[in-house]
Length: 219
Image (tube, rainbow, N blue to C red; front, side, top):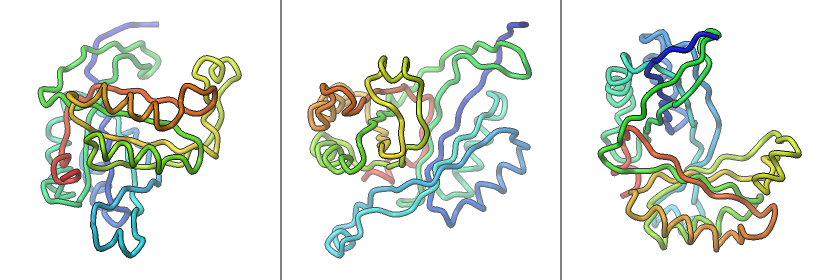
């Protein structure tokens, strides 16, 4: 298998469902070959709505694989079309793909440092336990989250290694936070979710290469 170097990135975008058509317009412009869309819930930071019992809204979590040569223009167009500079319109973040298989070739890329020093924290909990995780996350500096219902299973070997299987009764909670609170937030989530118990859940973090709309989403 031939090995070569190529800059590849995953662009993660979380937007309201009624704005997906604007995203698709940008995808068509850049002739993007791979993207996937996942229905999810976003937390609502509105005191009046929360008092009325409205604590979440339907969102779409879209992941797009794109080359480094297109990345900056692609993100700029998404920011403009989706109005990510405005509060409540969504968030965007980029992760670096360190290795992948592209057209049958082994691809390695160099990691890019995120000057903003933001990280993605992912917590996988049993169904119905995400509220405890969200509550402790708010108290430890997180200003918002996205919740995805888990589907599918993993092998017995992987389940033993991670201590948790990704099954339909799981909830996946995503936080984008400043790296300064990464360690304390992960520890708080670990304790709140009782993740020391086998099968209770896991929490892990990933570095981000680029973000858009984070300040407006979480303030």
